[in-house]
Image (cartoon, rainbow, N blue to C red; front, side):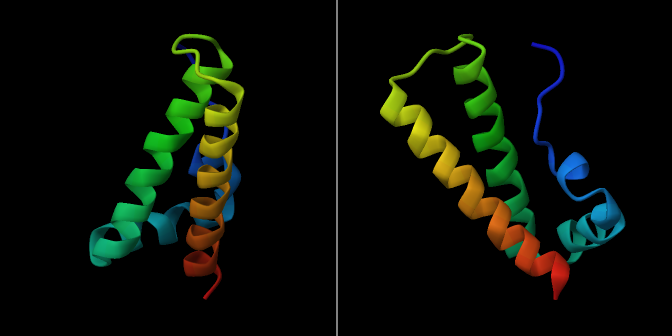
Length: 78
């Protein structure tokens, strides 16, 4: 499948160390992190037609990804 865009290390390069630390020390953050990557990869598979989905389903995945990213950013900026 190649490179998946919107990975968290690309989205927040200045916070890679903090993400690593939070993944190890905060179970809720670790779950958010894993959920984000799962949804992000699902969006990428839909966008590249590896696993096509209805437009509404793809839109819902994008919204879910955005909500997870926002919550992750709140963790990183606190």
